[in-house]
Image (cartoon, rainbow, N blue to C red; front, side):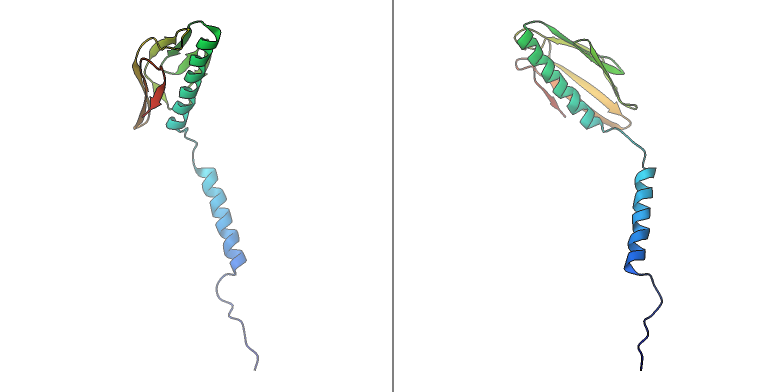
Length: 127
């Protein structure tokens, strides 16, 4: 007597193919939203570079935050869409010290993160 294979259901290859199509569509549909924490980390890193630049070149280096961009010694970086930050201005002197202690808050929808700069070291931290 010959055994018959059941013909109901999908093969493993067919199932994997359908799952692959669903995953590709899901990736395509998701809208791009810049990560506020990653953006602020990049700006913090650039601020540390400005501090080092002030010490190496032995001059004041200005950092100006506006509502839609930050200017680092004349080089302007625009914020990604949906991100706004408090306005602030400070500079690093020739010794690398920051001119004032301050907190800069950036918002993206309901999320907000803060950059805190302390006197003395001039280094910032992200909260």
